[in-house]
Length: 387
Image (cartoon, rainbow, N blue to C red; front, side):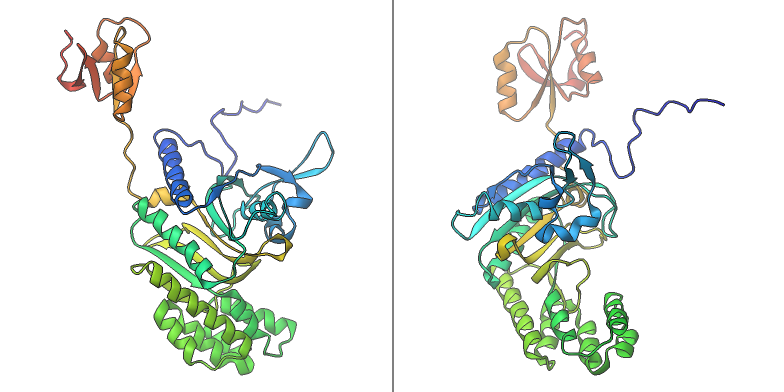
């Protein structure tokens, strides 16, 4: 019998990674840039804890993420705690409890890491970074449009090219199916067909609703074309109300962000377990992973709310690389005011920790582009060893 080889200290569980320089700094700067956009529009930042008691985190809208949640036992109280897989339920709890008396509309922003039990089909990591906004109180197209507009502004500020906001209205499908008489098995098969965009199966299982559902299935695409199809299809009153709300939201978004790229899928419902109105998924052209998602839902105490959660780690893989600070080597004995002035100009100063014979060699070794030589800033490549 032999002992197992020692575990490599760099080995991490699947789905967890060390973010190293310069990616870690770029991620932090990108995250804070998004938060500044949100703050400029009056969204107050909150910071909920990574762990909560299971019964509070996974109630209300949190119930939809229960299967994705890591659980641990609190050694003090012996109660089960849960690591958040999503921050939106925490914001809903805060709004309904600690900020219950704050005037509405209540605008909140947040950022932090989340941990997921298993990787849903749209995720590749178990630890993810989120940055988002929640608008709690009003239930109007204007509120829905504000969430999308701020997402567009944040992504534009980061330089993300060719962004598309894909809208859907999950209650529209629910309202349509409520008009039919389906056995549980047929309804399940029809939902699966809609999910897979299988027009033949929709025709097979849709009964009297099949013509409408098939037409809406083919309507998915640019927002205006999809809305034109919706406007001429004969919908029952409940479904028509949902269609009209979607159209009003699209018009309000386009009025606020005229150059935005919007698409609409009238019968998309997958992944919107607790949402009750217009929903949005954010993509960049040519990329499969989502940059973010959100939509309308009922917050705790059944309060109307809408929000958008962005994925900074994914976004920064699509955005142009952010330039790192230029590094300047500061030899031993340089006046502190010189380094202070350089930092004020945006440089990163790397101070020598003692006397050395050839400072420029140390500057090169540490990846510095410049060195302070005789009180002046000089490119490392132009400094002779005599300096």
